[in-house]
Length: 579
Image (cartoon, rainbow, N blue to C red):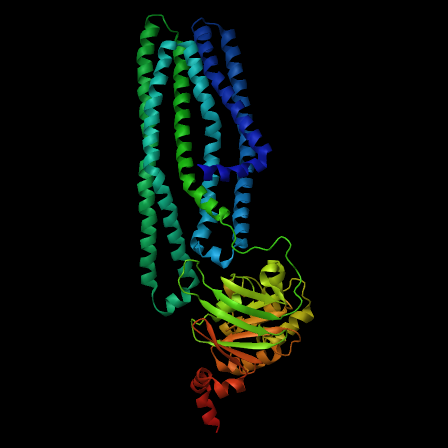
């Protein structure tokens, strides 16, 4: 309940629309309640006494009440629509902005499919709850209490039947809520699983087709889809008992009142018009109870969604900027001092162990090591994608934790091993690096990254549409465009995380040669190929999260057994062929 209150608190940002919507629905309900009372006068004072003037008067008043109800209902719909759409827009915006503040360790707490479900499906559940629940929640209590009150005023002996049916309806509603409440959480989790399967399949569709695994993926989707269907079926078959149960009680009460009312009318203890009005109030009161029960079902489902949304909003970013953080990075000088790191505090082993080294501004560094040697983890500490567990990382002579995150990450460009391009043109993707970049700067970045070789040949050049995720270009072309995008940032530090692996060796050497010509730009190249780092000022050899050697290519060839072995495996045969 606390989670639901916290989410619904966003409604208070739109107090004007909320107050107007509630006011109009109350006015609408009040005028609807007057209509049965006027109908009683038409029958008892008009038809029964053959008083045409009373019939016309009461009929006219009924028309006025109906018209006012129609007008106020229209205005309620208008302000409620504005309230709900603003609420859902704001909630989605808040959740999305919160996700943007997360560090990698925060994102480890949620699966991608779950975050997508929360920002779409769970927000939609909250929106549907307000669309279907606000009107009955305001209208039903008024209809219930005023209907019972007016019934007691006209026929106290019949009105007690209302009181007798309320506990029965309450017990039915309680049992339905008790049974369905835990199932809604399971339902939302099963939707998460379904989204995960769809996302994995769509993003890896080329791999699926190349391995002819379509049937396997269809079966996997069918299993997740069946889980959603079965959970939905189990939940809704209980929830749907609400309407027939309430209708059974309503018709039972109607029969009782008609039976007892007929006896009272026959004994001249009750007028026909009063009996007719009471029957109208029966329908209004029981319908009000039915609407309230439906609202409770909507609220019951929203408990699970509000909890999931609150989890995202309450997650505190593990990495934040200090209030008085520095924004300017003097240069690309990097220093690691006795750095230890592990992803989870409870983990027994460190991913990085006692890392210490210094990189001067403008220096070219290669980082070499096998898969799982924590090369990418090492450089992620420079941008504070993660924070060190122990030790200190400094850039430009200051601890990275003393910098504003935006300022630090603006000064560092990273080209990841998994290249990411976005829907749009080549130019739009390049401007991610610098939205204000001139055409001369774009052309220079393309030249350095050797991307101009193919961009100029594409239809439209820079205006060529890459499609979703850059599907219209090859892996090597993606890498070169990502390098050009990073160069447009004009960073003080640029990191290449095995980002030329899809390029041929000649293109790779050309790109690295141009990068090393950039003045006062520290460049770090993470690679598994020795050819990628041979030209660096120094090379760091990593193994199992530790630095095992540092030196130039010549120095490592003389005293590093690991480097010698890698060199022989990768380039020894090539050199022998040239001898």
